[in-house]
Length: 430
Image (cartoon, rainbow, N blue to C red; front, side, top):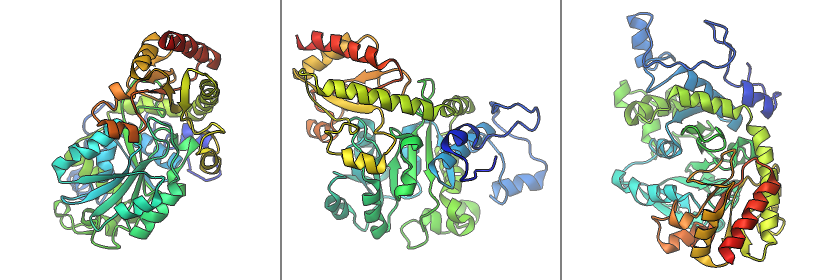
């Protein structure tokens, strides 16, 4: 179908990128479970390998099922192209890979998923990269952190675990002035609640494992390119602006224009890093996206009810849900996230670490898992799990202190969720 702007989100989440199978007429996107594809002849093969023709070579690079998902995600986020990969963590590396070089740094928000903080503060050092962590609410600190070696700024639209909402436009104004791309992880918001490209983001990444798939069955990641960044404005991004030796001196930005980052992600990133999304996982994710708007509406509705109840409970010190009228981010939510503040937030339990452990062990409907964005409601004590590798100071900065429990609110009956929390708090707080 044509990706006309006259189509609404609910229509695009079902139809974008998908067409009846030309061989069989199958209406649902088939799972193309194949490793390789037959070339028409030697000239066809050479044209594909030279990037002179778009097509399928080998499923580490491209696959028809994955291609539908890439087109759908690019459409829903308002980008020009997308590259799917094996996980959200893979997507983050794929996003940074064309931008960074030894000695370069990324400026990152302090309010990030614990695994991302570990990836940025520890693992990327092995590539010769580094990260500077700053509070994104302090725009002066963001400006000050950017230097001549900064190649990207990275934040989350709705942060994990606290559910804080980022003023993407304010950060984008800073990155635009500095001439560096802004990467926004939109996992918790999804394009239904927020489209970061409309607020100035250069690249958008997702862990598709979460709300996009929505059923806790497969892992996957994606990088969406806005197509708006001038990679040739200076010499900071030679992977995209300078001659590429592996393709006989081809310059990605000069050759592919707005699609330069997307083509590089496939032709170099997937080719050499091999972080490939398998077609069956792509199929499950496509099916999940078909009901994304319906699920997100229920996620938000339930989260608002549960957060309001927790805020009024004397056994709870505070709730971080940005959708509460009492939240310091309430006005920002109205301006930038009008459909809601998502379904992820934390709350502080009176009694500290031990009370949190008792609470988690006492819940019956909530599943104790290291995941979020499922149709099922999920709970975790971040300080002892997802953020365990961080220092106490890093845990506090990330909103994952020892007295904090993270909730991912599902689409069950909200009254049942409240009753489950009530009985668990009674056991945890005595």
